[in-house]
Image 1 (cartoon, rainbow, N blue to C red):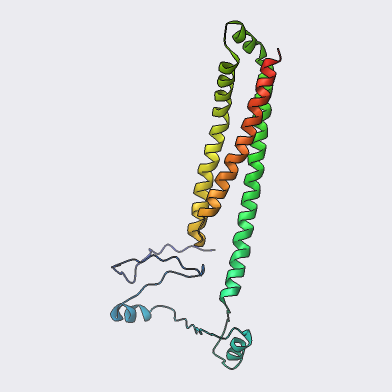
Image 2 (image 1 turned 90 degrees about the vertical axis):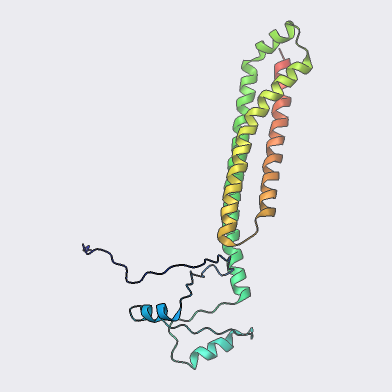
Length: 215
């Protein structure tokens, strides 16, 4: 492929008076510029002309649209779209993305919880003598339990907060790109994250205390 060294030039310059941002349901919608007659006539002299024929059919039978196409030789590429068809395609595509994302996220969540759990249990076996010394110097069971619970809480809280922040950013971006409301999904995922980590935290503290008291 040969590259040209000719400088880029601007044929037309327009001043944008206002910008209106909408959230169309049709993801194939493009940017639309509304020009005055003078700018439109100047631009149409150099721009490539493309003609589109749009029909808003109230008949749900697709044969009506096919009949219009067959009787008119002006049509080139034909594209049919209905609300139900678009809704089905959108649900399939977004549902697949959400399923894969949530499955991978849940897998990493469970794996992270298991790693933290077994790491804390291993440390509990290694630190049993320290808790024996604490009891000998006068620390009661409640104080030792509070110390262990606080220590493990910090370890579980850090990945939980990071996971929640990542979920908020990812689902918010997904909702903005697809035009879907993600409030319910976001609340459900955060609640699931917190519940799973709370279960891991409870069993870790309980087993940690049993190991610490065993010596």
